[in-house]
Length: 115
Length: 116
Image 1 (spheres, one colour):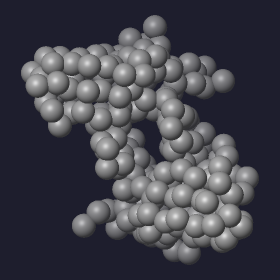
Image 2 (image 1 turned 90 degrees about the horizontal axis):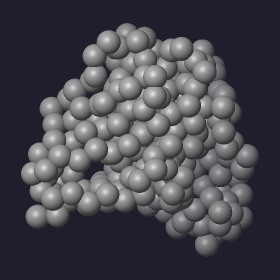
Image 3 (image 1 turned 30 degrees about the vertical axis):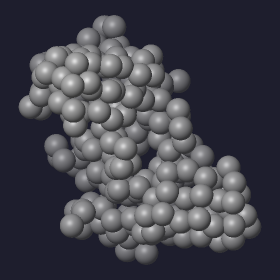
Image 4 (image 1 turned 90 degrees about the vertical axis):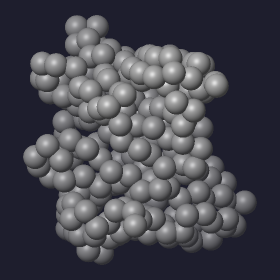
Protein backbone atom coordinates (compact mmCIF):
# COMPACT_ATOMS: atom_id res chain seq x y z
CA UNK A 1 0.00 0.00 0.00
CA UNK A 2 1.15 3.52 -0.79
CA UNK A 3 2.36 5.67 2.11
CA UNK A 4 0.66 8.73 0.62
CA UNK A 5 -2.79 8.02 -0.83
CA UNK A 6 -4.80 10.38 -2.96
CA UNK A 7 -8.47 10.07 -3.86
CA UNK A 8 -9.86 10.24 -6.43
CA UNK A 9 -7.11 9.30 -8.86
CA UNK A 10 -9.09 10.57 -11.81
CA UNK A 11 -12.03 12.93 -11.96
CA UNK A 12 -13.89 14.80 -14.68
CA UNK A 13 -16.05 17.62 -13.41
CA UNK A 14 -18.05 20.47 -14.87
CA UNK A 15 -17.25 24.15 -14.71
CA UNK A 16 -18.67 25.73 -11.56
CA UNK A 17 -18.83 22.51 -9.57
CA UNK A 18 -17.15 22.05 -6.22
CA UNK A 19 -14.60 19.27 -6.08
CA UNK A 20 -12.48 17.94 -3.24
CA UNK A 21 -9.27 15.97 -3.54
CA UNK A 22 -8.31 14.03 -0.47
CA UNK A 23 -4.93 12.94 0.80
CA UNK A 24 -3.98 10.64 3.63
CA UNK A 25 -0.57 9.46 4.75
CA UNK A 26 0.75 6.69 6.95
CA UNK A 27 4.29 8.02 7.27
CA UNK A 28 3.61 9.92 10.48
CA UNK A 29 4.86 13.16 8.92
CA UNK A 30 3.66 16.47 10.25
CA UNK A 31 4.17 18.46 7.05
CA UNK A 32 1.85 18.13 4.08
CA UNK A 33 1.64 19.88 0.74
CA UNK A 34 -0.52 20.20 -2.33
CA UNK A 35 1.15 20.72 -5.72
CA UNK A 36 -0.21 21.20 -9.18
CA UNK A 37 1.51 20.04 -12.36
CA UNK A 38 0.86 21.55 -15.78
CA UNK A 39 2.68 20.40 -18.93
CA UNK A 40 6.05 22.10 -19.30
CA UNK A 41 5.88 23.87 -15.95
CA UNK A 42 7.00 21.27 -13.44
CA UNK A 43 5.17 21.32 -10.11
CA UNK A 44 3.92 24.43 -8.36
CA UNK A 45 2.96 24.70 -4.71
CA UNK A 46 -0.68 25.47 -3.93
CA UNK A 47 -0.86 25.16 -0.12
CA UNK A 48 1.23 23.67 2.65
CA UNK A 49 0.65 22.82 6.30
CA UNK A 50 3.02 22.40 9.21
CA UNK A 51 0.44 20.76 11.46
CA UNK A 52 -3.30 20.65 11.97
CA UNK A 53 -3.41 24.28 13.12
CA UNK A 54 -1.14 25.63 10.43
CA UNK A 55 -2.20 26.42 6.84
CA UNK A 56 -0.14 28.50 4.43
CA UNK A 57 -0.62 29.69 0.88
CA UNK A 58 1.84 28.63 -1.77
CA UNK A 59 2.58 30.14 -5.16
CA UNK A 60 -0.81 29.57 -6.77
CA UNK A 61 -3.46 29.42 -4.05
CA UNK A 62 -6.15 31.49 -5.79
CA UNK A 63 -9.25 29.40 -6.51
CA UNK A 64 -8.26 26.72 -3.99
CA UNK A 65 -8.81 26.04 -0.30
CA UNK A 66 -7.48 23.34 2.00
CA UNK A 67 -8.37 21.64 5.23
CA UNK A 68 -6.04 19.75 7.57
CA UNK A 69 -8.52 17.52 9.35
CA UNK A 70 -5.88 15.51 11.19
CA UNK A 71 -2.14 15.05 11.08
CA UNK A 72 -2.60 12.32 8.49
CA UNK A 73 -5.21 14.04 6.30
CA UNK A 74 -4.99 17.09 4.07
CA UNK A 75 -7.71 17.88 1.54
CA UNK A 76 -7.75 20.32 -1.35
CA UNK A 77 -10.97 21.94 -2.58
CA UNK A 78 -11.85 23.77 -5.73
CA UNK A 79 -14.89 25.79 -4.71
CA UNK A 80 -15.98 26.56 -8.26
CA UNK A 81 -13.91 24.63 -10.77
CA UNK A 82 -12.80 26.30 -14.00
CA UNK A 83 -11.20 24.70 -17.09
CA UNK A 84 -7.73 26.14 -16.46
CA UNK A 85 -7.63 24.14 -13.23
CA UNK A 86 -7.37 21.03 -15.36
CA UNK A 87 -4.08 19.52 -14.17
CA UNK A 88 -2.37 16.72 -12.31
CA UNK A 89 -2.49 17.34 -8.56
CA UNK A 90 -0.02 15.89 -6.08
CA UNK A 91 -0.17 15.61 -2.35
CA UNK A 92 3.17 15.32 -0.58
CA UNK A 93 4.52 14.88 2.94
CA UNK A 94 7.81 15.40 4.77
CA UNK A 95 9.19 14.97 8.24
CA UNK A 96 10.05 17.99 10.33
CA UNK A 97 13.60 17.07 11.20
CA UNK A 98 16.46 14.67 10.76
CA UNK A 99 17.75 13.20 7.55
CA UNK A 100 14.28 12.05 6.62
CA UNK A 101 13.29 15.70 6.56
CA UNK A 102 15.38 16.03 3.44
CA UNK A 103 12.91 14.02 1.42
CA UNK A 104 9.43 14.92 0.30
CA UNK A 105 7.23 11.94 -0.49
CA UNK A 106 4.58 12.30 -3.15
CA UNK A 107 1.27 10.58 -3.64
CA UNK A 108 0.44 8.98 -6.96
CA UNK A 109 -1.31 12.05 -8.28
CA UNK A 110 -4.91 12.95 -9.09
CA UNK A 111 -5.83 13.75 -12.66
CA UNK A 112 -8.52 16.44 -12.69
CA UNK A 113 -10.29 17.56 -15.86
CA UNK A 114 -12.70 20.48 -15.77
CA UNK A 115 -15.02 20.65 -18.78
CA UNK B 1 14.74 34.97 -7.04
CA UNK B 2 15.16 31.25 -6.63
CA UNK B 3 14.91 29.31 -9.84
CA UNK B 4 15.61 25.88 -11.33
CA UNK B 5 16.51 25.54 -15.01
CA UNK B 6 16.51 22.33 -17.01
CA UNK B 7 17.61 23.21 -20.52
CA UNK B 8 17.02 19.82 -22.14
CA UNK B 9 13.34 19.25 -22.98
CA UNK B 10 14.18 15.78 -24.29
CA UNK B 11 17.11 13.38 -24.29
CA UNK B 12 17.78 10.08 -26.01
CA UNK B 13 20.19 7.40 -24.86
CA UNK B 14 21.05 3.89 -25.94
CA UNK B 15 20.36 1.13 -23.48
CA UNK B 16 23.34 0.36 -21.22
CA UNK B 17 24.96 3.73 -21.87
CA UNK B 18 25.29 6.57 -19.38
CA UNK B 19 23.36 9.81 -19.68
CA UNK B 20 23.62 13.20 -17.97
CA UNK B 21 20.58 15.37 -17.35
CA UNK B 22 21.41 19.01 -16.73
CA UNK B 23 20.13 21.21 -13.93
CA UNK B 24 21.20 24.67 -12.90
CA UNK B 25 19.82 26.62 -10.01
CA UNK B 26 19.83 30.12 -8.70
CA UNK B 27 19.64 31.04 -5.04
CA UNK B 28 21.28 33.47 -2.65
CA UNK B 29 20.72 31.22 0.35
CA UNK B 30 23.86 29.44 1.61
CA UNK B 31 21.82 26.47 2.81
CA UNK B 32 19.67 24.58 0.36
CA UNK B 33 18.93 21.10 -0.90
CA UNK B 34 18.72 19.72 -4.39
CA UNK B 35 16.54 16.80 -5.45
CA UNK B 36 15.90 14.71 -8.50
CA UNK B 37 12.57 13.03 -9.10
CA UNK B 38 11.49 10.57 -11.79
CA UNK B 39 7.98 10.66 -13.22
CA UNK B 40 7.03 7.67 -15.39
CA UNK B 41 4.07 7.81 -17.73
CA UNK B 42 1.80 6.56 -14.95
CA UNK B 43 2.28 9.93 -13.26
CA UNK B 44 3.72 9.23 -9.82
CA UNK B 45 6.73 11.19 -8.56
CA UNK B 46 9.58 8.94 -7.48
CA UNK B 47 12.39 10.36 -5.33
CA UNK B 48 15.82 9.49 -6.75
CA UNK B 49 18.57 11.41 -5.02
CA UNK B 50 19.30 14.32 -2.69
CA UNK B 51 22.30 16.67 -2.36
CA UNK B 52 22.71 19.15 0.46
CA UNK B 53 24.55 22.39 -0.20
CA UNK B 54 27.08 21.62 2.53
CA UNK B 55 27.67 18.02 1.53
CA UNK B 56 31.32 17.51 0.70
CA UNK B 57 30.82 14.58 -1.62
CA UNK B 58 28.53 14.06 -4.57
CA UNK B 59 25.46 12.03 -3.72
CA UNK B 60 25.08 8.54 -5.17
CA UNK B 61 22.18 6.10 -5.09
CA UNK B 62 22.74 2.93 -7.06
CA UNK B 63 22.90 3.85 -10.75
CA UNK B 64 22.14 7.49 -9.98
CA UNK B 65 24.75 10.04 -9.08
CA UNK B 66 24.57 13.78 -8.74
CA UNK B 67 27.38 15.85 -10.22
CA UNK B 68 27.26 18.80 -7.84
CA UNK B 69 29.30 21.84 -8.88
CA UNK B 70 28.48 24.46 -6.31
CA UNK B 71 30.45 27.34 -7.83
CA UNK B 72 28.70 26.82 -11.14
CA UNK B 73 25.35 26.24 -9.40
CA UNK B 74 24.76 23.03 -11.26
CA UNK B 75 23.41 19.71 -10.05
CA UNK B 76 23.39 17.33 -12.99
CA UNK B 77 21.95 13.84 -12.68
CA UNK B 78 24.03 11.02 -14.12
CA UNK B 79 22.32 7.71 -14.85
CA UNK B 80 24.77 4.92 -15.53
CA UNK B 81 23.96 1.79 -17.54
CA UNK B 82 20.58 3.06 -18.76
CA UNK B 83 17.67 0.65 -18.77
CA UNK B 84 14.46 0.73 -20.78
CA UNK B 85 12.59 1.36 -17.55
CA UNK B 86 14.47 4.63 -17.12
CA UNK B 87 12.35 6.20 -19.86
CA UNK B 88 10.43 8.92 -18.02
CA UNK B 89 10.30 12.61 -17.16
CA UNK B 90 12.99 13.75 -14.75
CA UNK B 91 12.61 16.80 -12.55
CA UNK B 92 15.26 18.72 -10.69
CA UNK B 93 14.02 20.56 -7.61
CA UNK B 94 15.43 22.83 -4.95
CA UNK B 95 14.30 23.08 -1.36
CA UNK B 96 13.80 26.62 -0.18
CA UNK B 97 14.87 27.07 3.42
CA UNK B 98 11.83 29.04 4.56
CA UNK B 99 11.17 28.19 8.16
CA UNK B 100 11.98 24.58 7.46
CA UNK B 101 8.81 23.95 5.52
CA UNK B 102 10.68 21.98 2.88
CA UNK B 103 8.95 23.79 0.04
CA UNK B 104 10.28 22.65 -3.31
CA UNK B 105 10.58 24.60 -6.52
CA UNK B 106 10.79 22.51 -9.68
CA UNK B 107 12.36 22.78 -13.08
CA UNK B 108 10.28 22.15 -16.19
CA UNK B 109 11.66 18.65 -16.56
CA UNK B 110 13.57 16.57 -19.11
CA UNK B 111 11.96 13.68 -20.95
CA UNK B 112 14.40 10.78 -21.27
CA UNK B 113 13.88 8.08 -23.86
CA UNK B 114 16.01 4.94 -23.63
CA UNK B 115 16.33 3.02 -26.88
CA UNK B 116 17.18 -0.70 -27.10
